[in-house]
Length: 591
Image 1 (cartoon, one colour):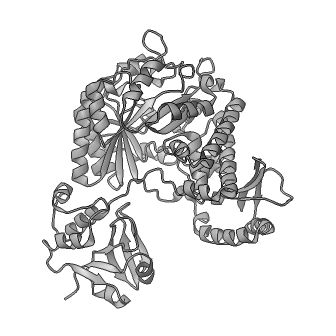
Image 2 (spheres, helix red, strand yellow):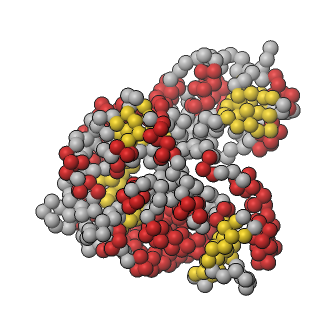
Image 3 (cartoon, helix red, strand yellow):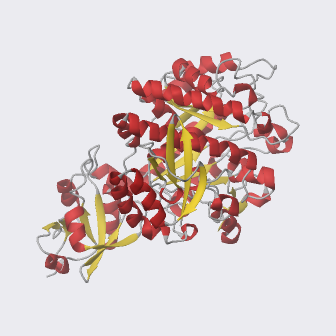
């Protein structure tokens, strides 16, 4: 069975298919009215065929290829995370008193001391060497309950250690934090402007009137101070916006920030995390209808800029963590099924000053979210409840037509409103469903009226970081021959380009340790039986970088392949591997 939703907007009628994250434009009259329906594969294909023979042929193949995924319980599928995030709070104080700051409600919370550099290094070692050792890269998030620039010496020490650790493991380690930018001085600016490892964000909610929740200690609006500091930064940075009832005009907020701060490469708008009905900045004070109206105006702005070939206007929305931008991105990537809620306790952990590990930095100090300690490791029983939080684990999300675009909400938001991490906030759901509908309609309108721009945006990658498998491959291969050499030494000794290590240079380096090491061209399948494993496969079908895989063995015309990105072993037919991936093997032959 398939879940479909008939959506109408922008003068279009769209059939959206939940299980495929795909949709088609409906041009002819049909019996199904606007809303959600549950239909069989046969009925679905019948409807699509009535609309377009071309779409029918396409969807027949899509459904056929998707059968394997659709037949599985998505909640049981193994999840590999390319990026692991470690959160920590070096500062527990701030020079501003923003009305919606989650830390303002708890003096006890703020009185706790921030993490020191010794504990921070220990936490990084735990993440990189143990908890997330199969990741492609790492992020160290030092946001939280205070202003990070109050601990600038800590930032510099952390940066130095991350650079050294990155060299040791051969993987990228980035530091990220938001700042109110009011404390920036010449020393800080010089350091931050030159840094290639620090991802910088500025907290700002729009123009001066829209930023009225951000206050100095004396109660004055902090906008001018923040804007002045932000304009001194001579490098790309992100802008984090908190939406409340005073800045519901998201189209105006976005347009203003885009024009006023050209250095900003991402603008991320998130809804306030306050659910106190009596609070002046509660989420419930937002007028949802008015907010959605402004999101429609934002779509109009996006279309204008797209028609003018100003794709950066869209990229700036897609590149960060903006809620609406995230939905648009997922709609563009048709076939992508997003089942994970937030990464809390899975791809993200938080460590406090005692070395205690929590699933989320916002919940540091709450025993419910505590899952371990750096000395003792992760308590798997405590962690289990966070691993079972995807959209197939509660009835509300499981039944929802938009589940695989939404992917569920922040666990802390659920906890704050329902006293558990599983059930979503119904009011937030109401808003998200309208934004997802708008995203689908926007993407389909673009696809049908401006296919050139649609393709450009569809091919956009949020993270352009290319994972260099070269060093990992050398290290793994040499270890299999009981030759130990650190990543740091590899980085110093192996000649590399920005595209990775050239095959001839890789061979040249390994020959220092194994003189028989050579290129082996696969001209027939029998050659695989005469190779010593593990072997290295050069991906000569890869156009943009020098990339490699490890071949662990060969049996019954099947190759066992180890991928550097997740360290998993998959089985591939040798003929398929040769034709589609590589026919160049690097190893020794049996004597």
